[in-house]
Image 1 (cartoon, rainbow, N blue to C red):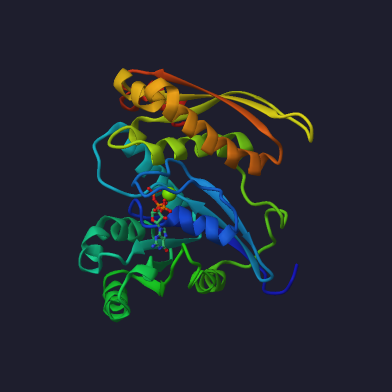
Image 2: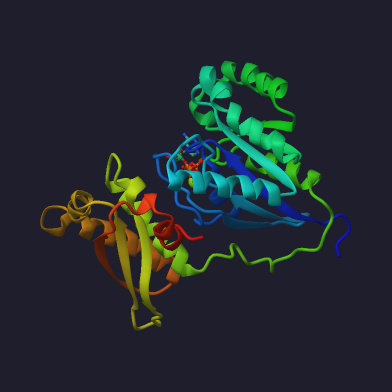
Length: 299
Ligand SMILES: Nc1nc2c(ncn2[C@@H]2O[C@H](COP(=O)(O)OP(=O)(O)OP(=O)(O)O)[C@@H](O)[C@H]2O)c(=O)[nH]1
Ligand SMILES: [Mg+2]
């Protein structure tokens, strides 16, 4: 083993919409997690592997931690909390765009991180959108309220500060051999990423409750080749017929846009042409039944 090589698990935790998935994608240089301007986009833990000269970091992107009585949201938050328990170090992330409210809104997350008993680093994200003079007071406020080994301002979107976070995490992680080959980026199969990309397009192209009522499953997948397209059949599940009508759109127009945008991205990932067929089905109130959540959100 190379002397001083580090390897460990880092859970990325924070409120919904602070930029956790954007960070995961930036640090791995690949789109592993979907990103949208709407909160509660990520529903499951997603592994992203950073491999550098000095160490390997297994980042776990997690759903945003928030208060909710809805069964689906409670499952999502439980997944985030369990990722904290499995981590060596926690990377808590917050959003600098509303500095006066930030620390109050982060009270639950800070409490959860503290309860995990794990060493933690705080990244204050979206500094590309904040007046610089507001940053120092915000940093010292977090230093006071949380027990952070470091507080680092970053822009996950533009990349500023991301290397500083990696350096600090490597310092804190245990020595160890890399657990994955250097060129591996995630443990998620292409099928999962494809379903997520379709869900991202639905989320981006619809409004109100539709994104929160949507799940995507892959029904069939036939690998293509240099000459033959990969054939994918996927189902978009919604909760009500009115939502089904929205997702399909006038004469199928919205479904077609969803399909085209998703196909272009899946083709990049698959490295072949893709024929994507989408079907929309209503599953009455699926986000409220345990059985349906097991099936559509994963156990
Ligand atoms: N200006 C700016 N926007 C950012 C930055 N990082 C993320 N965003 C935006 O913030 C929104 C939320 O980003 P996500 O990465 O999906 O946030 P998340 O924390 O994973 O959200 P959930 O999965 O819902 O918990 C998206 O519109 C991103 O483009 C940043 O550094 N600067
Ligand atoms: Mg996310």
